[in-house]
Amino acid sequence: KVIGDATRADYTPADNTVAVSIAKAPLTITASEKWIDYGDPLEFMGASYSGFVNGEGPGYVQPAVQFSSNYTQGDNAGTYTITPYGAGAANYEISYVDGTLHVNKVYAVITTIPTAIDGLVFTGSAQTLIHAGEATGGEMRYSLNNFTWSTDLPTGTDADTYTVYYKVVGDVNHYSISSASLSVTIAAPTAIIGDPNNITEVNAFLTYYDGQNVPSLIIDRPVLNNMYNTL
Image 1 (cartoon, rainbow, N blue to C red):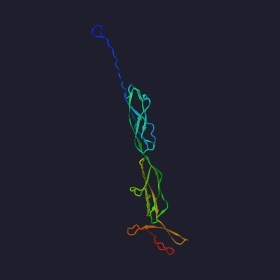
Image 2: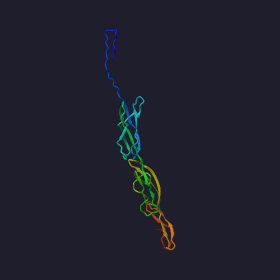
Image 3: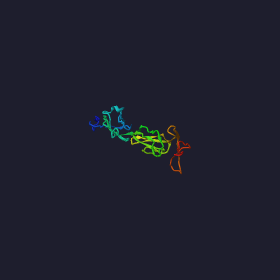
Image 4: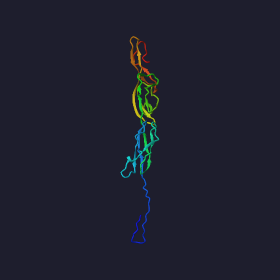
């Protein structure tokens, strides 16, 4: 109110009521960015706060902030959204900012390592060189040159020692596994000559004619029991 000056005739006392509005302070709650691995559940989410006054902090927020997401455990690796909601705080006008969830790939696993097939001997036909491997989270691939890859098991024809490479190509949720190798031998055949009571073994070797990949078994010189020295 206003009190008039009693010494002046042109002033009289007056009073009035004035309404004063105190606006809520703005408070922004931002969901924290989070990283998990493929297959993991989404838990332990958090948030950051911007806008507290008078020394107040997150403990002043009641009810506490809650979170939802478009991610479900087992979803593919990728990027998802974390959405905060449901917080309350007297004297604050709350707004929300979504956070980002990153679901990372994990490495594929070789559950059965490929192994060489033992006891291979030259037959003139292609022979499978290894027992297949198995993997989870990807596909086994094989190669004889570490460059050209296939899901087919590698084969060899000639008597030789082969290097077989293998690796796992990961799927959308798994990282690939780099190549490793093993050695596999196709042995030259052994010729047996002589009479049944006195057998002599002669290791054979391969030769090729006119540049063609045509193997011939050669026995160097021995002649027993009227057998020819070239088979």
